[in-house]
Image (cartoon, rainbow, N blue to C red):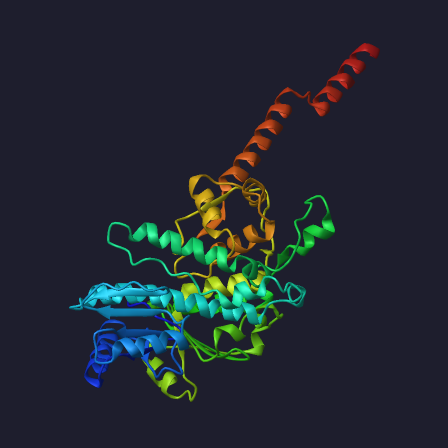
Length: 412
């Protein structure tokens, strides 16, 4: 299944004729469906620029003055290096072209993410005028185009760059602002838990479970717009923009607030065509991860132990999941050995809410769970201790009976 992008990257093609533009449009359609779309310069989020065309040099100079921050893929017979650009040498190899264009896509998606997070920035951060120019004027750093030998290393650097760039915003938006708690304080302890079944998360998870059991598709419709789930293909379709859903996840929600329908996936095209609004596509598990983070808001599902070690079933695909602060460090720690939630926060020296957020998402998507064996082991030790005590402890009932017999014989 090809990668599905919720919103296609809007790309302008400059320095080339209509024939060349149509060629790149064909490449997008055939090899990168739903990931890129050609638009004019006023709507563009990125640019493909051919520097070998007639008058291209002058056009390039004007373009850079007007749009210095726009992520750009430069094409030329001679190698060119400019700030905030990627380069592909002619003649064009389609695979190399698409691989390099992926870096442009990553930069655009990061810029989108930063804009959304800035729109939710709390009032408490508005007085920080010294930080504002750095956030708004500094272009998103772009990695150097990787070779096959260094692609994994570059991917790691890119993710680290993302994390450091939006770390403060993520902590305020996705993970809430709950302070660390004292587990001996009952009032504080109560505040770190939430019930997923009282939120949209519970409705969503029940719908996914029913659709899987019946090998069907599922429709949810109401305040979230219209959403259709296809677990067999790990696919989700929704009419509402994701950036409007975040605040809705925190509201208490009952099943009757939404129209629900389980239907045969053969009828999916009918339901899609009968909807007037356009659908946005996403991976089902990717959206589930986001819903859990948004709903948890730095808290834990009710009943979660703070002291049981946590097992990470396998490494999550963080390159396409909502990246919470210190997600990489937490995943690396749990991959090495199981640790409790409190031990994780203390060991990494990070706020507890970051650990709680990551666990809530990983647990919801089936990637993390408590090591129940340690609890079973403690219960077995307690039972063993009780059996030992009962073995050596005198039986009061038998001793009383013996006393009565001896007493009777003595006085008879």
